[in-house]
Image (cartoon, rainbow, N blue to C red; front, side, top):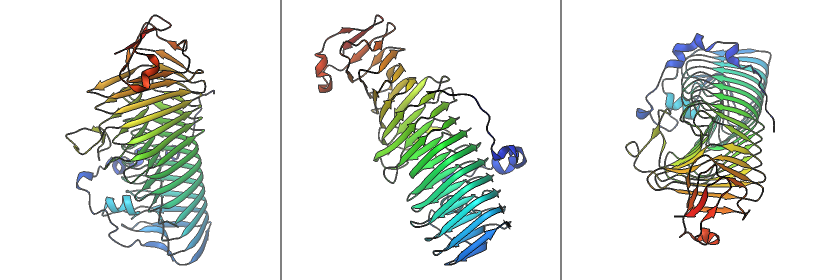
Length: 448
């Protein structure tokens, strides 16, 4: 696996974000958000209800508040090609805009199908680019240039079991809570390929996930957010990143959480992907109030600023999306439980578990890890397992409950003078027989 440097173009190179700085600076108080059910009908200047439509080589505009440009509903099928869609005008309810696509440039709903090809979509004042809602509501978007400003101006948004298939996309958003791709309650299904995505605002991930985010060949930079928020509040969710180069600038590289009750079954996959984490305290992977699995295959994680590979904690992220919440913010949480499966990857950084949370770390298929495992606060659970082909280079003393190594000689551990302690009372460690073993490099594997 080899990486090189390259420069990519995104829509903020054509329309500087400074031109819409005031629009992007607006912050809504989500602690006092409005109603979370659809409050009013969606209207637009180009409205299709149970109809077929064809739009080619046109400029479609709407500059009114609380309206869309193009609406397809009640089983419509609309094709748009080689056209430009422009939306300004404010939303009277950012909750309605965020969850129901009110004020979005394009709104597709109620079993409709929308095809867009070679389309430029520009939105301002807090308007999403493309929105779809409903189990049989599908958007197919190819060769799309999309720019948005203002709060909740998501790029591609699917909810209510709606689906988006996007290919060859350039997207930029400058406002807060404006993910390039977003799936929301009860679930959204995103499939995207060949994407360049850039977000500047707080809480604006490349993908906000409730449902499925299946991302291939993505160059993504979230300057003030993780690459992905994976929210399993409504049940298991799946986020897949393949053949991608991703950079995150706030909180974590990837956040796995539930903003309500804890659920099991959520999955994150990094396959032949590079994840770069910029912040001095940011882990690459973070789990709170969730039971989740992360699969890292033939991938690289670069987080030299923090030196933290993964964190599990009794916590979640607040509505402000700029800090982690603790007991004082929400006392109805559960410890995070994260299992990480690593294949054919070289990783570095610490594993840190807090407050009864757990990290189970499995190295296989010629994987190499440089780091330590430690408890950050209170009591927590850590487990490390190596197959014969994988190595662990210690950077500090590590205290773990369960440890196993398929290489019984322990020659695949470079201790650098550091030691590993294990729980001699754990049945999983029965093969160690409560003994102390000398590790290569001067350290020891010993019971505690």
